[in-house]
Amino acid sequence: MENQVTPERRPVVLSAIQPTSIPTIGNYFGALKNWQTMSEDNDCLFAVADLHALTVHPEPAKLRQQIIEMYATLLSLGLSPEKNIIFIQSMVHAHAELAWILDCYTMFGEAQRMTQFKDKSQKHADNVNVGLFAYPVLMAADILLYQADYVPVGADQKQHLEIARDIAERFNNLRGATFKLPEPYIGKIGARVMSLQDPTQKMSKSDVNPKASVFLFDSPDLIMKKFKSAVTDSEAQVRYADGKDGINNLMSIYSCCTGLDFDAIEKEFEGKGYGDFKVRVAEAVIEEIRPVQEEYARLMKDKAFLMQTANEGAEKASRIAYRTLQKAKKKVGLIVDK
Ligand code: TRP
Image (tube, rainbow, N blue to C red):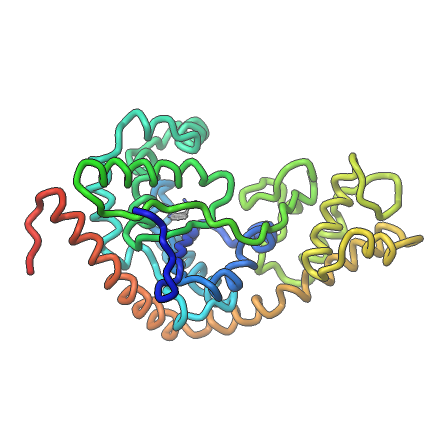
């Protein structure tokens, strides 16, 4: 099917995020910060991908807590649960059900070629479960259930979006038009934030060095400490240049917070040392994420509201997902009531 956008139908965008860790400011500046803007021109669905998290066998009580935390995080970004559908994946039965049907339309060989599967099975050789293998198929179900036009994906998920298209195309060819073929969402390009301790590497949630990554809900004191110990160079001049990865990274973070370009930043810090600069960057980051932190703290005190909103989100998502699921069931020859 063509991705035709008529005035009545705004593009459908689906995003999902695993509840396995608090996002870093890298996730924030690279993606999350733009979700609010994205939701102004599109019909957006935001999911907490809790079923995907099961592949790494999280401790149940901890997972339960992390699911709520991630749900509250989405709301704290300013995404309105009235204008968007914000839900928890496992609360919508259709995901697991469509995933099974799609498993049967996914070839073993193509799933085996997924680089994330290869990486993860090497890293966690003691737990290479079937869920890990079928992970991209569940992700395909997440996307195809809502007939999504676009999916915002980082480089690591691009291959998974491609396999979702391949599965949809195979199904459509064999059983007739059922699923829309999703495309990557090309929005405003977010910043690529690097590790504060090794600025040649991307900032990562799972870095073993606790000073390498700044998390969205770190306290202002901790954020200040992490920036003060950021790795720089010995030139002692705030300017953007090859080989100055640490300073380049701090400048790019500062630019995200202030909107200033690199020339303006160089001017602002002319004749000033790295010490001053690092403090200013930390202050700018603290200021930038303060509203998100405050809203998050407020929401986490109101579990009843979070659960009610999650239930309403799941209901709205289910209505859409159910239509696609019924269609797919019919197409493969299953008996569909009504
Ligand atoms: N696999 C994605 C990640 O780890 C999360 C995810 C699950 C997802 N389902 C999705 C992303 C559907 C986009 C669309 O980042």
